Image (cartoon, rainbow, N blue to C red; front, side, top):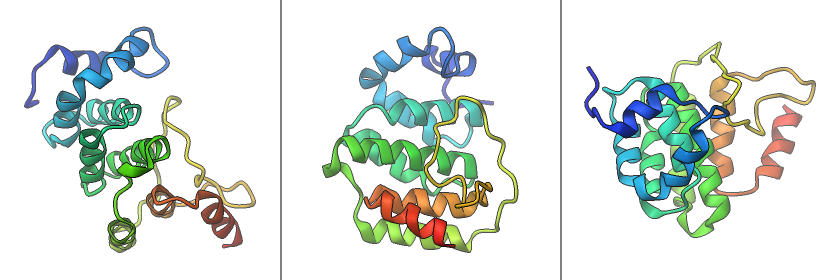
Length: 168
């Protein structure tokens, strides 16, 4: 059973990005950073609720949101880590002072490479797009490799990383 039975959690269970009600949720996200962070980091919450919480946090460039997304980069679930990496990247692009130390991001990328490699990834039409989903030939790359590039891009130089990916 889920840990946090709140009106926000109920909305996150039923409202997806690109659906009616999402804009209202997004507009209220700055006032809900604490609750969104708790939902994201609770392993007892459904994955969809956690993914949506991460997406909303990505639009709120605050220390609290960045800290929750940073912590979620170590979640056991690949989808949570991917969504958190993209959301944290958006925050750091909007507010570079919130970027985690480069050493931490490098260590997280190394840890990601040590995890078992996933061969498939259930993508949703509303997933935030990553600049690192495809190689130079347009083939989808492994989810693990995509995530490593997403994590490293948080520190900046996404264009250089895109070039490196296409060289592989």
